[in-house]
Image (tube, rainbow, N blue to C red; front, side):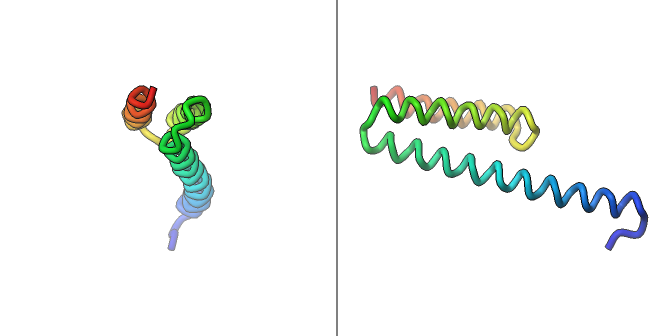
Length: 87
């Protein structure tokens, strides 16, 4: 339990950020799963479109500080390598 007013404010702020971060991360996982499903189905056009969506979402998450920039770049690189292997 927070002892000061500033600690109470930080607790409320942290809770809001936690909820936002959790929703963004779950969206990232969902998009990545959809991308991998289209990739395994062999649909190159849909996989390319899904890859653009995933990479855009990762860039936005990195920009907001939800995901580290290097982690986003690493994941995008690995997903792109999988797409290029199919082509």
